[in-house]
Image (cartoon, rainbow, N blue to C red):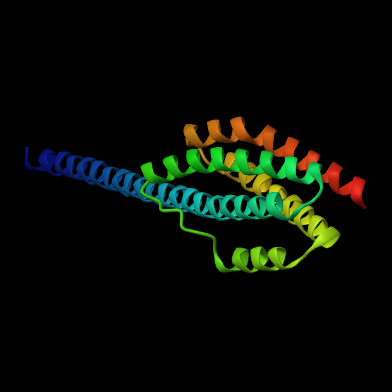
Length: 186
């Protein structure tokens, strides 16, 4: 009987050891998956924060430049497109600000680079102003389109994707109009 107990204890010991070892591996896998999930969430949050801040800066800059164009330009087409751009950007800014506030992100005023661009635009006159404004809007609209496309590829946030679907076609339309007017002048 004592000879029979030793092999049974060995088998039981190996079985318990195997079960414990495999469950420890599962805990490590679970811990690693939790870490990866948390890391992905923080990357997504950081990406969304960056999107809202960059988009806010671009929109504020475009609104300011369009308001200057409405006052300084003598060409009716430029005044008309600048009004469209300003109205469109104000609507977009309102929605983006609401979304950002829900995520506790604060969109600040125009950053320093945009202030310098606005000052330079304000200091130009005549046809140089028209060219500078149209070039600036073309670049800004293109930048905004790229921001929309980047965030749509990288986020799963349904509200952001809905915003992109709503405004991206309008951005393309404004870009085409701006480029068309620019080509008419030059």
